[in-house]
Image 1 (cartoon, rainbow, N blue to C red):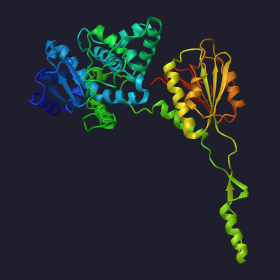
Image 2 (image 1 turned 60 degrees about the vertical axis):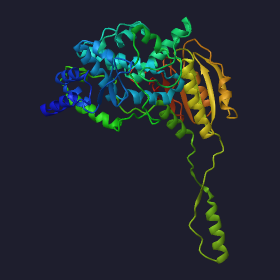
Image 3 (image 1 turned 180 degrees about the horizontal axis):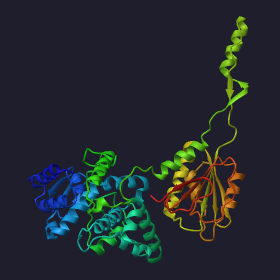
Image 4 (image 1 turned 90 degrees about the vertical axis):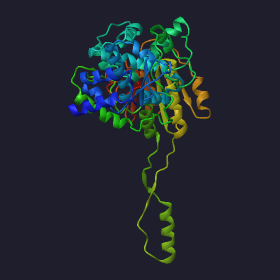
Amino acid sequence: MSHYDIRDFVSKARDDKHSFRASTALQKLAERDPGFASLSIWINHRDSDQDIAPAWTDQKTIFYGADFEKFTLDEKIAVCAHEIWHVAFRHITRGHKLYGRIGKNFHPMLWNIAIDGIINDALSLGGYRLPGNHISLKELLKQYDGVDVDMRDAIGEWDAEKLYMHLLEKIKQQSEGDGDAEGDGQGGGGGGAGDLQDPGQDIAAKKGFNGDLDYSKVSESGEGGDSAGDQEWATRLARAQLAGNGKGALGHIIADIPVTRTPWETVLRTKVTRAVTFDPKINWSRPNRSWLGQEADARRRGAPTPIYQAGMQQRSDKPTIFVGVDVSGSVDDAMLNRFASEIVGIGQRTGAQIVVCVFDHGIHSVTTLRGADWKGEITKIEFARGGGTSFIEPIAEAVKAKASIAVILTDLYGPFPEAPRGIPVIWATLDDEKSAPKPPFGALLSLAR
């Protein structure tokens, strides 16, 4: 960023239409890292008398409450950078999209905690001094995984969606042993996805954290009050990284930089639907009905016989989706329900029958769902737990069922057979693509985000 650009930013920060409380901190932030200045110039900064949080954002404006003035100057600079990151990294839009995917399993406060942990550890690595009660990614992983991670490695591995799903799974496992987590279901900063029990409330209460995301101005499309969309902010982020001097968080390689990712539900839907949708083939032994009419008319009139037109081959069998569910390990009920809903939806749309195979080191059950009552049928299947894993038996069952496609929900730890001839296989796993074991055949689909 040029000196002219920084002066323009400082002039805007001093404007009486902008925040008086944050003006000095924003100027110092611009001097420290021009990358943040190049992002901040697209954001409104306003003082507010609302008692929501020291600072919060609605994706268009960053608001600074009375408690913001209690921070030291260094802490104010870090908080300004933190809120700018929320806007630039589209955390409200991304939260809304995640809610659209997972529905009642989306909890606004837990989402806020996941993204704050990533932001704060990246800022700490950049030398920023955060308020003492801040949420930390390192602390979250220590609490729920029992591992002491290097902050640099952690922010390079975890993006917000992946971390959220990981924390949700860990908290659910913990609550099964210790009782249900408490929470009043209200998200921070103006509400969120509805009155749902939010496991993030417990963490927030211990930190004295009220949340700093205001969803009230988010439309049904997930866009906030700003006219810029994801692509425009991606361009601004790229420019900010070039402008940054490396001292701030923008100088680090972080996994949470927003990139366009196709949700796994869409990928699964596309691949399975394509496999079970019948692609008609030409049958030269059966003439086209239209040609039969033309040929009869030509004979009646004594005209030349028209060029032969072949008919299309009719499908006599019903397409089959084979679903293998590995019950030996980490697939929890919430993920199983989401996965099952997707498969049921595909069956309803395509008319395919679904063969569900529950397995671990052997086959527990094989059930054929024929579509009379999809949801009722799938809930009758008993998903036992425990045991090792072998993929030899379920793949043999897929061949036996003459499946059009096989989808295996698993952690991918176990012996594999040879690839089944003529049956595409999708290995759906909870692990990230980078950390998941690589199957010897078929496509890998990560459900981690």
